[in-house]
Length: 352
Image (cartoon, rainbow, N blue to C red; front, top):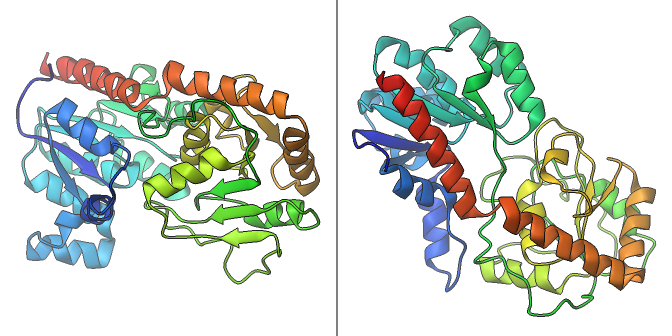
């Protein structure tokens, strides 16, 4: 059990919006922030709470943004333990915790390599205030070390999917068409180039409850065989995955695992995946669990998609391997257990 105290999970999103959307659905996946809050015996604070904060919190929100305002809100609540879901809130909170002793701060470092975040670390040197950093890619782990964080405080963890919700059909079927889901650093122009001269039906769902990136399907010529969809329920999205012949994850080349959510959802649904070999996603791929193609290469993407459609036995083998890789180490329960264990150790060290 985690020791009790004044404990917070700071979620860098509008939790109320997410939960209100899911409340209207008959079926929906479990949310990682809720499972973590239960396991850590902690109260959730998110962007939803910032607008209800003090006048100063709201002023910070206006002038410095939601992330800084959420850090301030967490700080003034007087917590002894914080788990933060992103570094854009965790780093300002670490600066504030220089004025308070006896706290534990653990956070997910999605992308520490941006200039502003690197600058914040170099200026504030929050090495004592931060108890542990969790990174989804080894590039981010290595960069955290170059910033000066001790190796024992930086952990490589696998992302997660709720495999109880995203699950396969009883028997593998070849499926129909191509499905591509998500917004974060997707390269839909390359996907459109890859399939525009084919007869393959393609469904694109360029939406995300988390990403603030520009929708790469907007103000572009959409090939006649592409259908854009939005506003799908979780169950509708799951059925879209299950019915696909191939799930394509076209990515820009970045050093963090953009695209990992749709990758794992598709694999958990037992579907064959073609994914761009972005540097940040490679740690999330086991051998044989997907076909990879170079980023920005429409010819290679088209050939990989066509190969899986034309070779259903190979597609089935890749789908099975992908599903096994998810169940082996990337389920939501495994994710929560891993993070809870890291938090327990970090908190115990802080108590000494």
